[in-house]
Length: 164
Ligand code: FES
Image (tube, rainbow, N blue to C red; front, side, top):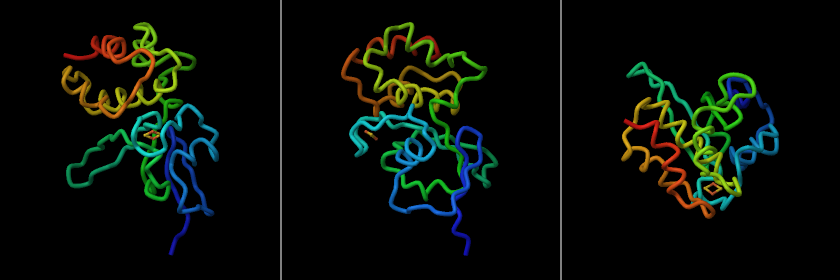
C-alpha cells in the first residue's frame, strides 16, 4: 500500500513519505511548510483563525466544490488528494492584495490582525462557490470567525460591496 501523502497547497504539489498521522493540517502548514499566515488561535475549532479553503472534485456532479475548514481540527492525512488554499495563495498578481483583503483593510476591519486571514479565507471561499453572494450568505459564512478587536460591523461593511 502507498503511504505517501500527496496533496496540493496553493497549487504546489506536496509529497510526504513520512507523515505523522497525528498532526493537524494547521501544524503542517505552519511548521513544515512555513506558511504562517494561517493562525493558531484556540486550537479547538472555536475561533476560525486557522480557516483555509479545501477544494474537492465531485465526479458525480463533475464540479469542484470549495469548503472553508478549521485547519486546527483537520488531520493532515485527511487532505490526501485534495487542494488546500491558504491566505498566501489568493493573490492574483504579485504584490497585489486580493479584493477581499483590500476591502477588509480599507473598511478598518483589521486591528490586531489575528482573525483577518481566517475572515479573508471564509469570504474567499464563499466567493469561489458563489461569485455574487447575498448578505445572508455572507453572514452565514462568517459565523465561525471570531474577532475581538473591531467587532463585526467594519468587517461586514467591508465585504458588503461584494454581495448582491
Ligand atoms: Fe481556533 Fe482553529 S485555531 S478554530
